[in-house]
Length: 178
Image 1 (spheres, rainbow, N blue to C red):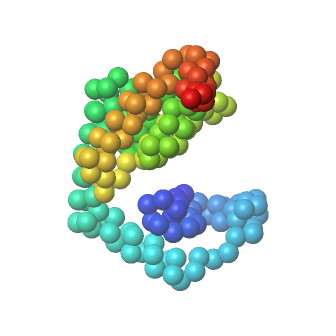
Image 2 (spheres, helix red, strand yellow):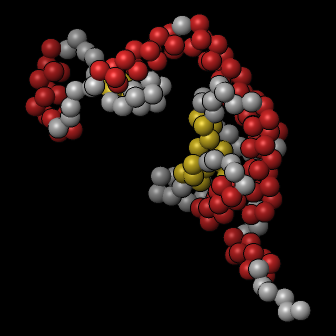
Image 3 (cartoon, rainbow, N blue to C red):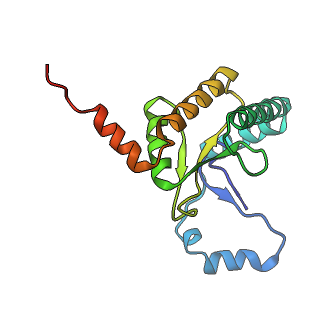
């Protein structure tokens, strides 16, 4: 099984098997397959072109740049005290802690122009929220350095216990009479 929605810049997916009963099982028992449509010729052409790129010299060069970028970003985050668990891949998890702090840090990141996807409870334990950061071959070092600087600033701004951080925010927004 595979999806065309990420690597192949299209929609849909596929199931390939030599098992004789799989086709019957898919037709008889798979509700989403029952109500699906065939892929359009344009989508098929996009997938074929993407496959050609992925398996060719350009794909090899992009994978190498992506691996370098992943290693660089993980290294820079680790150097600055962030935890990036798991094996290196284009998705870099960055542990940001409890849900309340993680939400505040995420809001800060988005307001400063950094894109992060927050994964929080109930997908993970309440104290184990993390950012799901997506790295591309086209990122440049300056992009990743800017991201790390934003993350450091978010942690600095919001690493205090959430209630204290919220109280400090309220105090800074109080209008001072002339």
